[in-house]
Length: 241
Image (cartoon, rainbow, N blue to C red; front, side, top):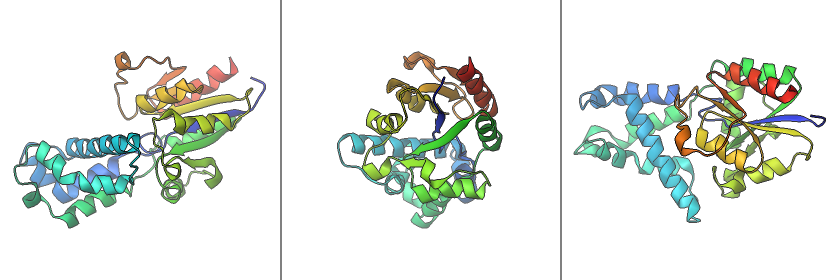
């Protein structure tokens, strides 16, 4: 490659783990959930997945809403779907909000600093593409003492479009020169496979999902890795080959 080299990262789930969110649910509701044979992590996953579903459906139907508003709205429904017959007797709205605060207190994954360092040492510029708020996303990196210039964080939320709509990825891809080496890296297969459709080279890390469910995605990845550092090493090798 004779042009510049870029890697665009997903943020929440890839650079940032959900541990603080799951731990908050455990602290606030853990004993009550376990009394119904529901683990806090499984409830947390089900809750945010339900919110993501509604967020996506609203976006598709041109009724975009902030994710936090949707997370608040589907809390009691998720408890009901988990088998809690009287959801509002299990948790108050204040307790729900305390759990949500855990979501806004997420922290960087331990391997992201070395991952970024490896890529930068090999000439890559690092960017982030998120559906989240720019200030909140920048805060993740500041708190984790990892360099991430604000101008390199791109939010599609401000444009009323959400990943994985291809319109969320195209403007980012098109801002680089045709001869540049353009990668998209994520721990969500739905995310990176969509980015590949607009032209990015794809790098998938199994640090979050563990199982990429390749049978439902028809997109070839240039890199598949178990850890963030391994992903950086493989991107570097693939770019120079």
